[in-house]
Image (cartoon, rainbow, N blue to C red; front, side):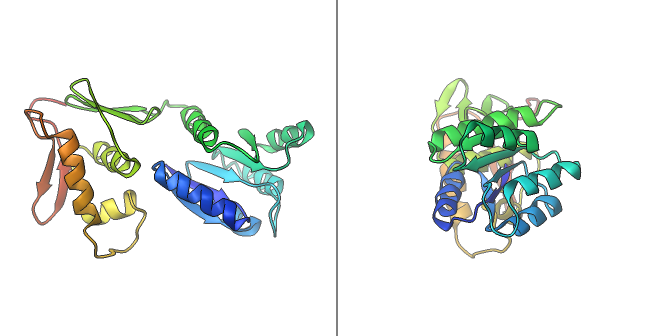
Length: 228
């Protein structure tokens, strides 16, 4: 998921960006209201985390503009304004949820997951399957042949991306942009290291390998012939 965080307090923003990144979310940051509104309108996000008290343009004005322009991106207000009237104003302005500062990061993650489940009227696929490999996006768990596999956040995001592109050759550039949010090649072996770790976790000890290296092209996660 790609999130937009509109937050002017640098310490809070850094804390949230770090935590969200460790939890597998790609997060863009806008430090003021005007930039936040521009990014929210010009780019596609799965969810927006929005402070209310912002320089340039306040959070409620951003919300009203988004909703009047028929942008339906889920919005979670994160604000120190926590009185009942404040929460009611936020919800009436078009927010989908309202969380008061200070907050527990685990609760923020739970609310993000809940909004993600509600945001797709088509019912976004929350479980991905390939042969006997299963990934659950909501609980962020992975199993193969019924055996639980412990994943670090980046490993989970890498596997999720590969499963979304199962049967396709995924290039280094695709992984850098889709998993690491790099729009350039940092010339490190970060992908090789994570692919190696992931292969050890999902293939080692099982009869049939699923993760394959396509020499000179990239990687492919595919089921044995005749399975899906």
